[in-house]
Image (cartoon, rainbow, N blue to C red):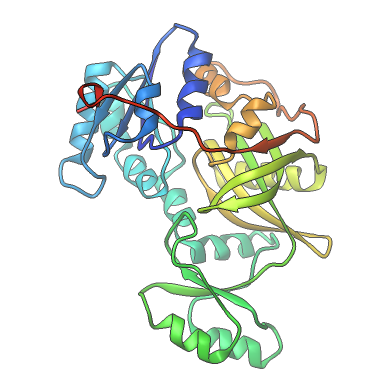
Length: 325
């Protein structure tokens, strides 16, 4: 069984986890647009590919799928999820299963305002979000909103271009700087992350892991501690199943004044997933089992509380002659 990981970047731990779970029964192939992406060198085989926005990108990935006889493919970055979901049939024609939720769900997750509307429609507590400054000012004047707030991109990831505003003048100034900005309540409670696996066959949640975030860096969890909370884990699993997500998803949450707020969903491996894997919540094994045509057992959340993850810097040294070209 061969698995292709797109836009592998620095996600060496994900590559390593799949190599371990395949245990010699297949290969892990990785791609990236840069020959300085460390995860390429952790894979069994690797390819340098064009940027996802360049013409012919999907054609190149399909060539790799055919050459490597890839059984499955998934991406580790948000902008590529909709792209491969949209081309699902072309991948299936060459015998490769795309491991991602539907195109519609990927688009909803990428659009933070659409996700806000979806959560509201399901009666799930979420962060108050305003698409225009006029909507925000009206809510503020009616006592339904207050400062401080975040001014952030409607579409985006990695916490880029997010600013804090604490006055009308700041909102006016920030909202005119770049297109497609929105205004969102600034939460002051504790931040959590929930890794969820939805079985590709049964559509049921078969793996879930909750962590309290201690520190964030560049939009990813840098330090965290494993916890359990039956209420929010049940809510996250039910939400994922009802919406029709498939495979691995990453959910961001806040606990404020005793209320759980679901803020964002990323239908891919989250940056903090290695914490879950180290605690025994094994999504790669679940995915491999699904690819063999077998359903996973009912939801697995049997892990120990109080296990801390602390990321730290590593380096990789590669001679120029050994760079992947």
